Amino acid sequence: MPYRSMNGVYPILSAPINEKGQLVIDDLENQVEWMIEKGVHGLGIAVATEIYKFNEEERDLILKTVVGVNNGRVKVVMNTGGEGTDHAIALSKRAEELGADALMIRPTSFIPMPASENIEYFGRIAESVSIPIFLQDQGTAQVPPAMAVACANRHENLCYIKVETPPTVPRMGETQKLSEGTGLVLFGGAGGAFAVEEFKRGSVGTMPGSTLPDMFVRVWDAFQEGDEEAANAEMRKHSPLISILAQGQGFANWIYKHIMVRRGVFSPGSDFARHPALKPDDEHYREIDSLLESLDLVGK
Image (tube, rainbow, N blue to C red):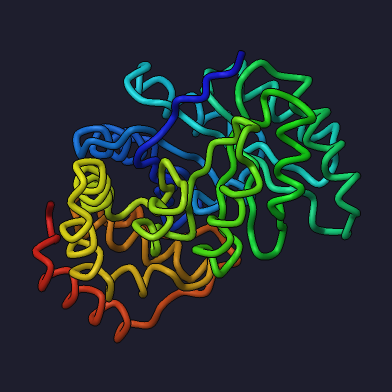
C-alpha cells in the first residue's frame, strides 16, 4: 500500500548553476539544509529545478545529493516524466533506486494523446515502481479531474495530484468533489499563489518555488491552527514577491536563484539558469532587491 500521508509544504528546489553551466553541489547541499531548518515537510525536484534541462547523469547527481543530505528527515519527490512510456519507466525506476520517496509526472504533451493513452501511460509507470506518484496537472499538460479519478482507479500508486491548471481554485474544488472515495490526495502548486484558497478546497499541501519556504510554513501552520486570517496576512504581505516569482519558467529561474543568493543560501555566481532562459535586466534585479529589503529577507 503506497504512503498516502504526505502533506504540508514541499518546495521545489532550485538548481545552483555557475557561469559555465555546471551544478554547484555545495550550494545544493546548503539549500537542502536551509529548507529543512525552515520547517518544510518535503522537498521536490521538478520543473522549477530545470530538471528537464539535465542529462541523466546530472539528474542522478542531483537526486543522490538531495537524498544524501536529507538523510530521511523529510520526503523527497522526484520528477520522472518523459514523452515515451519506456523512458519514463526507466527514469522512475532509477529514482526509486536512488531513494526518492515519491515521483511526480506530467502527462505526455509533445504530441497530443487522448486521455485513454495517458491513463495507460500513468498506469504502466505505476506498475513498474512501489512508491507513490503525483499526477502533475499543468495548463500545457492537463490531468482533468475525471482523468485523475480514472488514474487513481487504475493503480493504487497513482494516489496524489498536484493541481496547477489555472484557474487553480475552481480546479481544486472540482478535483476534490470528483475524487471523493478514491483516496486521491490533493496538493497545490503554481508557486503557491493561491495556497490558502486551495487548502479550503481540499488541498493538503503546496509545492511552491524555492525562495519562501519559511513564509509558506507559517501560512501552513496558521491554517492548521484554524487562523485563516493570519495565513492570509502572510500571503498578502508577500504577494508582490509571489507575483514576481509567478513569471514564466526560464525567466523565473534566474529570479529564484538571484533571491537565493540574496537570502544567503547560494554563493554569488551560482545564480545562472540553464540555457535557454531569458535573463532579467539590471533594473528588474534592482526592483527585486528593493522588495527583498522591504520584506527583511536579505541574508535570512
